[in-house]
Image (cartoon, rainbow, N blue to C red; front, side, top):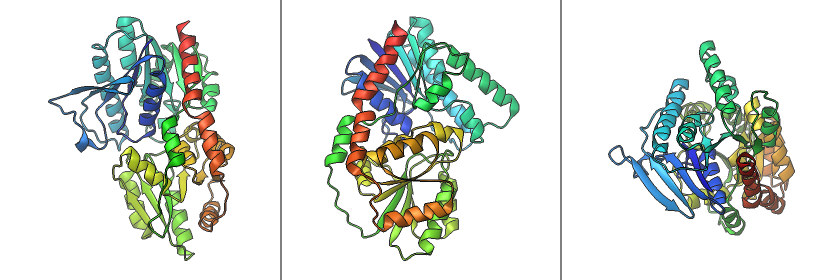
Length: 400
């Protein structure tokens, strides 16, 4: 079967949507002929071989094909910037899909809902089956996170979402909780199935066998991932500063990544005047990134208290658990359940005193997590075999 995956993000972009599409492409290519349609990398731009005068690049990776097209670099700090970026990708991807041979299934993975345009363009020409991936219930997420405030725009966004989700052949979600919520929506009559975000099995094996020599003497707490509004960096910075100022701990907090909140986070760190909090947006290769994960002592993941965060399973959380290192998680819902099931660390409520106590617990060497159990948990639930079953089950349902 021929399957086209459509995603704005793909490696070397190091965000959840990028890794999700890569894992899905690798898994599906074991049984199907897979093509990925994606844009030029957002980060690092300077390393991209795709330019405006050479706008398309096609290459084979393992058992699947990747077609990348050039997109101008846009600032996405504002709501308008994000919408323009998503629409631009969707229209270019829709145009590019005209030149891709007939596919049996077109699977839009990112950005949420906006991939409706390219997958429907290909469907209109070739009558391909369509799948849309939902990683948050749009437009609930942008409304809740404060992106959409104008009432007219909200109504348009809701109508667009209803049309997009009803005019498809199947829907994939990233968590069981999100699947159960979407099945209650009366305007959706097609199959809805969870297909987990995952980690490539070969990468997980490297985690298990990778030896890291700790060079620096300090204790490292780290957040690594997208710097977006779904995370409460202000609470994290305030709690760490309070802890470090009242102890003699030789520890540091690193916040690394890229995203719309980068400037705001830099300001928060500068305002804190805490020399033990560092910011890092350096691009790392996969090998360098995995080495960084394994050389970290304890991860921190401060998710905001809202619907979006409680129904998602962040890719970074799975990576943190897979590394065998403990995680301090500030969250409810699905992330809390995953960390507790994996025995991968401590879950805190939205209380600075709890977070400060967690810093002390791990700094003092308490064995709260179970590295061997963490590895088995990710291996059994979030790698190739289980995700392949989930994906192919959905493919079978919409093909019958």
